[in-house]
Image (cartoon, rainbow, N blue to C red):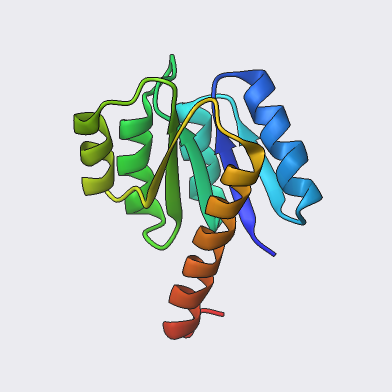
Length: 130
């Protein structure tokens, strides 16, 4: 159905999202930080990246910049408990397609993921990549 990368330094959030998204028939990989995420994005094509903004090793904005260069068709959904309008605008300007505040309802996250997977599939189809 879609391949998702969850990037968050919080183990509980990573595992809850993995379980929930796999139950919805998505293939889910996990990265505990930005450095690991960049390695994974270099080697695997993802439809959607769920990306925490505040991480210890490499912040989400820097991961977003690199991810969009490595995989321009992948949609990136930023996740944070500390949002400000300026930060949201900055992330959207750099190519994030959506933004969700923690804590979020699982159904809300699932809806956003579904919409973004559909978007990526349409883009790839229109470019003859599917």
